[in-house]
Length: 328
Image (cartoon, rainbow, N blue to C red):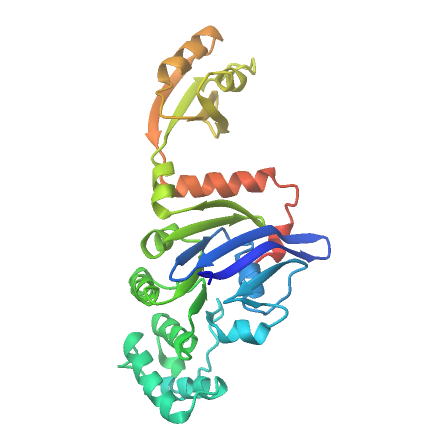
């Protein structure tokens, strides 16, 4: 029996002429915590809405625990707990009343519901507030209540859409640790735009930009990529237009990008293909092309730079610049 719990193949979602998803494929295995990462408007929430049966794809297929999200949406929904970005709470209810209500609509027998609520309250740290009105709770505790409702029917799959959104740093750490603990027993998709969250909580990371998957790697793989050096070059503005092309012609250079510069200067970022130190080659190229070199440095890239490289450049390369408006 396959251990793939969630699988999507060539998902496309169009809103009139706007393409929100462009042939997105993904799979998540049993017991895996997948970080689904991307900037606002990248297509994360659209993908989540398809997987959770809230909207149908224009093209492509998706299965959750073996159930097709269109042909057997009830089976798919029964297999998952879902915490959407807009937490589905009733603020006038007490926490206990709300969890009893969720258990009832999940058709959990009363005796079993009492046991499950007790367990979930302990697991999500709601013991001090279960008798309080939801509207009186902090954002962090309201997120805990949202997690509790997603877990009460003991689903094998948990889908969380921006669960740390709007939390202060302390609250975010608490919820992230809770998700990490929950993930030991379940398959989890954590949709977010925060790199720190996926580094700590996730086994694998998918990055989406403008409706396309642009990276599929482990957090360690991203960190290894982030450790790759970049070279920053500052030149006196020459006006001859040779700088970028001369650097691009160098052996070992993967990409050259112009950066913002002070008046009278030009600045470039050079990314190497491997681990070669390009500084001597850059210096020679500047001399050979009559370029006045004002600064040259070698720096390591951090994960934020890698994320920006993958998403901003995809945005610039994409011809569907308006598709983000409907994507999330």
